[in-house]
Image 1 (cartoon, rainbow, N blue to C red):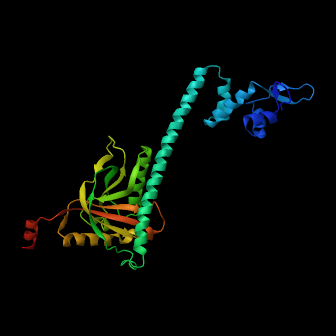
Image 2 (image 1 turned 90 degrees about the vertical axis):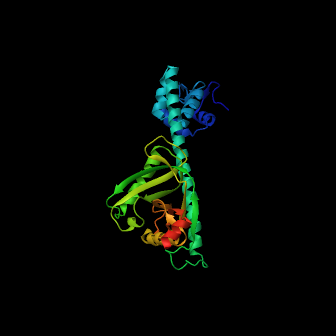
Image 3 (image 1 turned 180 degrees about the vertical axis):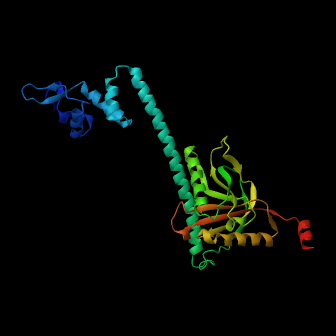
Length: 304
């Protein structure tokens, strides 16, 4: 029950406004919402009826993300167009935040999907009956796959100190920064492509390195291209990158023994990478080697 017919005590105001009493006291202290009536007999202070809507306005503006100082300014602004401009500005800010969060959540879901895929390879690799169970740098399965066309962002430049461990990591980080800056929805893993003769990247300091990342969006930008659209021999490497060369050599030997020839630069796709886990033995890398079948007349010529 109201203490006075036209006034609200601090407890009544807090109940009607659905906020803590201490919050109302704070608003009083900073001059944001000061009780406007003082009872001459009891010296108690009361809020008037027209201050209740003001409290709801404060709550609403606060929910929109305005600071208390900004709210104080808006409450004192007599020009509704000024208030409207402030609200429109905040709406634009919220839309920016929503877009950023949506992009971040997409990256999170893509990371989860990629790591689940990698985990399935690790589980198979470590299974008791798997022939590679005791040799972590060996994977029996070699496939011939059709790599579909896909959009990607990329950077490509000659690295003169490629054997320095931080070089590739820095290139990956730059690419991820690029995707975040443009709020792109990424797909899958970062890929390193070596525009050098096969295996050169494992022992030479100079490497023509391309780093790419598949994205949903098609862009009109120098760092965008459409990739894929080729046939590739692929294999999975589980474990440290120190032994990755063995998977490359094994795949190349398979190509030479099965009627194919290498037809493009070789790539490593990092399904689970140093950006995901700290244990090197849990790295999962897919080796992709573009190939074309050797024609029968070429085989005959090669063996003559």
